[in-house]
Length: 207
Image 1 (spheres, rainbow, N blue to C red):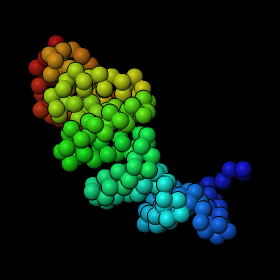
Image 2 (image 1 turned 90 degrees about the vertical axis):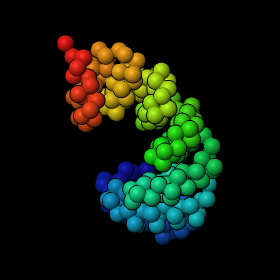
Image 3 (image 1 turned 180 degrees about the horizontal axis):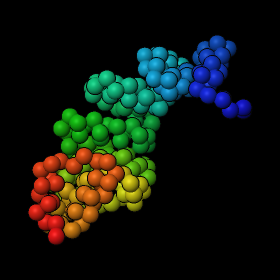
Image 4 (image 1 turned 90 degrees about the horizontal axis):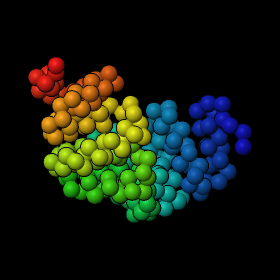
């Protein structure tokens, strides 16, 4: 198959495919992805809905629709679409990761941890899920578990600033100020905005 030269050509190919085979869920899905690349969000949403109409088991389309809900601040819609995704494909780590993220945003920490543990079990290289899990464990006061999850995240992606921030907080909770300072400094180097009160607390322990 000849590669498309750019997004516009990719989109036109998908539209041509749909014209010749309107029931092809993959073509509708690919069209949605192309439209997302152009930031044509309403059109992309229509394409993903068409993909589901043609292929009701297409979990990836549900996740994309959930992402569009999240973009407009609709947490309930995002949660609903991702729940539908993992119902269609129980081992779909991205769906579980998104459920965990949304549940954490809603303050449902136990539900978030359950979902994120599934996400990382199905995909042991899911950096974002390990990081969100580390954050959730911090919120539960489960500091050792938080550090373990965050260390897995930075092993996979050494420059993931949020994980370094979580480690700084975790090590500070454990009283290991030098490790806390090291991870805080790394998060700052990577452009992460550390809470001012935490920076002030760490400043008291700098030599």
